[in-house]
Image (cartoon, rainbow, N blue to C red; front, side):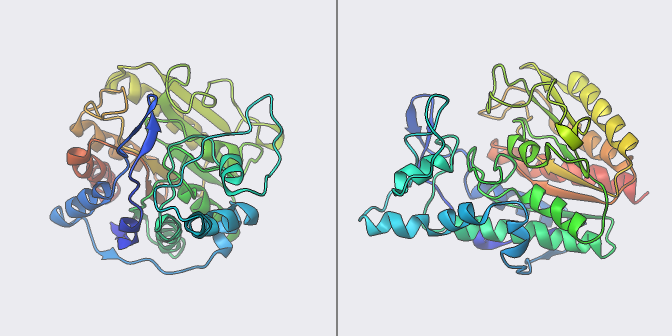
Length: 345
């Protein structure tokens, strides 16, 4: 399997995130991608290529130009104020406030964020932009005939909506790739999100559309981030009704319960008969993940890949979460090797 990877991810290294009432060292760190790349190379999964640059056009098919302009220029505006620490929001347009766009940097940051978990640093824009190009390059490989490809994206993307950052995410790599498939002639794309946290950004982007089926298996939002999306009764709206399926599970769920949800998601994907499958590949479902509560073990990720392969469709894997850093490479590559073992048999 071809892996697309950019060393630009090292440019984004937040000092802190707001969690549990305090500023803490970021769980989303450069070593995550380093460990995955090392495992890809050690296991000889396949060649590793740098991304092409497709420009901002494909990104604008998912994210608003105003949001991208803000994100691109935020760090320069911050340093003009004489600041050099991480740029984090401290106010948001909550329910009783108006969703108006202020002129101040902090006001705009709150408008374009939904939490305090997406610090902007000097290199964040370039890292996120390159991650989107990683996804687009892997997408192009499949569009040109490859059966599978792995976009080793960092920072991750599935929490980012069309004009919102949060949850370590700035640009929605999986959504950008899915839209590119549609723009290049595919008629139906299925997204399978296996990250522990609900892919709220991806859901919101495609919620009113029938050309993308979104399925997500995740910690129940009654108790887990992002809390305000990911319930079972969210089935899509308007033309998108019946094309959105959430499978929230209780803390402590192991492979038996998790795989039962995977079977339900796969049944929806099979019924949809998509041209392409995009997998938002989070491995924070691992039993030792420091910020998640599922109990999957490393061999379970082989079985996950095998089941996805049996869908029999060209498949793009886009890296999302996973914060047990020492094991992230084993778990992510196990999914890919499980997939390859079936799809190449």
